[in-house]
Image (cartoon, rainbow, N blue to C red; front, side, top):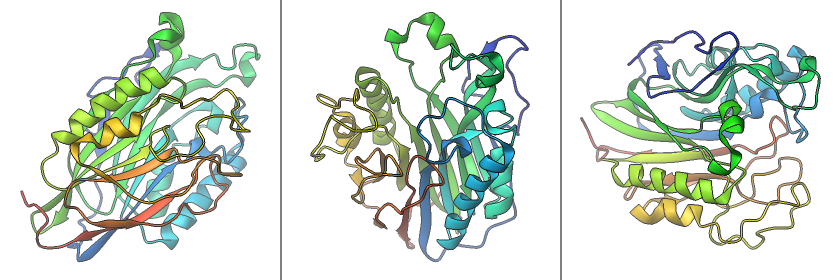
Length: 322
């Protein structure tokens, strides 16, 4: 398991992350888990808050204010394992704050894993804006913060949308599935899958969902899969005509049906996006067969454009051991 690395992108180029672009930071020894494990999942929108028109740079004061709200909710709910999406590190768009370290220090969840999804010397977005207003230098990804040690981890690459074209995809993010095994003490372990699937193409997201489904079917022992799936549950009533995104259409999208084919069970109900006026559920939590847990309704917050999910797992002596 590798340690933290420095940014890889060449000075005037972009970097395609590989399986090696996941690393863990070790914390203090954790006490044995008794009873239940409290977890959360949150797409934190790189500290940009609930604003949907995010094609601009944010000040340090703005970003820290949003991150502080995130930390406050996490601490209020006594979270043991926190899965995050859209975590910036040394990015111009988010005031060059290393959000992984910032959140790790303030939540007290000292065991951390990070998987890169974007590493570029410059992202020219929006393309029509002057350089001083573009995203610019980028190092971003997914993270899991844990009270319990990380025994192993892996970054599973996901395909980019072919319809984007090679030039666009050169500067587009490289989504992934972040997989790790947590040591709950006493030989008990929990496998965690942190997910952030494609947002702008149903066909590509279905392709990614098949990869995720295959990984979940291969899971040995207890596991939890959580994150931003950018997909609706099968029972969703509205599939298009969203006020915030009138062009978004989920007709024919069976992402979640594909993911749960291996018997994994979705938890909870309620809309998670957009945070200021939730109209659909894009964030989900799935449990492996036999694992028991509960999930609260999405909590109101304007610290991100997604609402956070908080829940608990029932952990007993029957939990698989190494």
